[in-house]
Amino acid sequence: MSITSPPKDYSNLFLDMNSFFASVEQQVQPTLRGKPIGVAPYTGATGCIIAASREAKLRGVKIGRVGEMKNLCPDLKIIEARPALYMLYHKEIKKVIGDFCPYFEPLSIDEFVVRLTKREQNRESATRLALEIKRAIRERVGDFLTCSVGIGPSTFLAKMAGERQKPDGLTVVALSELKKFYSELKLTDLVGINWRMEERLKNFGINSPTDFFEKSLPELVALLNHWGRLWFFRLRGYEVDDFIIKNKTIGHSHVLPPELRTKEGAISVLRRLIFKAGKRIRDGGYLAGGIALSIGFLDRGSYHLSRKFPSFSDNKTFLQYVDQLLKDCSWRSRPIYLAVSAFNLKKAEGRQISIFKEIEESRELSLAMDEVNDEFGADTVFPASVFLARNSAPDRIPFGKPRYDILH
Image 1: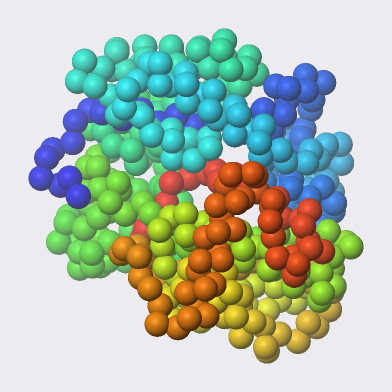
Image 2: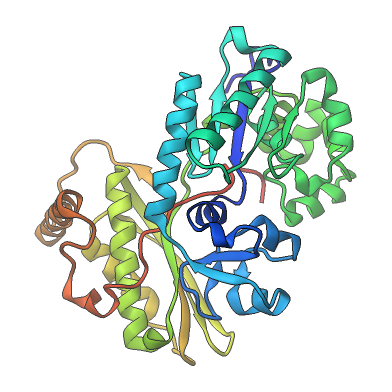
């Protein structure tokens, strides 16, 4: 945590591609330009829109059920998500940024943070660099692609600045301008503050970002303990978030197509989600210590259960633990939505051999399947139990905001 070194103006540039998935679709399909479109993995009425074009957002369309958004915007066109296409454009954008800046990091498929060099750490140079990158993306990647850029002392403040002007904006915030900057925001405009945290802060007499900013370090520590200390330095431009942005869970979710809205179909898809999550756990070098399971039903009822388990990373153990969570599920009506995630993640230190032969064999089998699928493509080999769902729950691409851990 860099709280011993004072923050410096113009240290970070944050670049956020505008309506990325939808803009890519409009880039490759010019007939979609100027029209409200939504991108969804499943385009039926019960599917979920994961990205909306700028035109759709102006009509009130946001992340949500396809049917609900089409009621709001009847001429909304739904496009099936194409992860491979978006990843291709992501890689091309990385090339552009890399040609300008040696020190940058993708935070998601549509967000990038650049650490500016000493030569670039002034308002004129940083602004010129941002404009050059924006122009190069349009010229070299796609003329319909725009991005919003923020420049500030830290990743947090650069991102906050970038949020001020969308789409295609450029905002700079310096340390001397922080009080004015916060005076124009609501608490929930601060990345990491949701409505629950907003209510908690208001109970403490913190009704605005300015109130938050003006609290002293002892006052915030007294109110929020360790998180008060983090927020004190974060709001003042110290780079504290590199140390707490991390995966808390690994999981997948899926809206079931009509033909799989049965207990048998749902379990087949659930097993597929488990195998996908298991591979990510192993690829990350993790062991998981708990599982959360959610099932949504057509009658709008739901089943949720989470439980801690002994550490695991292999598919067989993951499946067995989920089966335990399923024992009390009544399958009250037709299932429509599934989500499963592993939590309490920790790095596996070295190669830990289990004393139980069946667990060790399962680990070896899981790793062997991973190697084959890495070499020859995803789903080259898969267990028979997921055959029914072999075309469901395709790979997704993460995008969105970096995570800031706060008091819940």
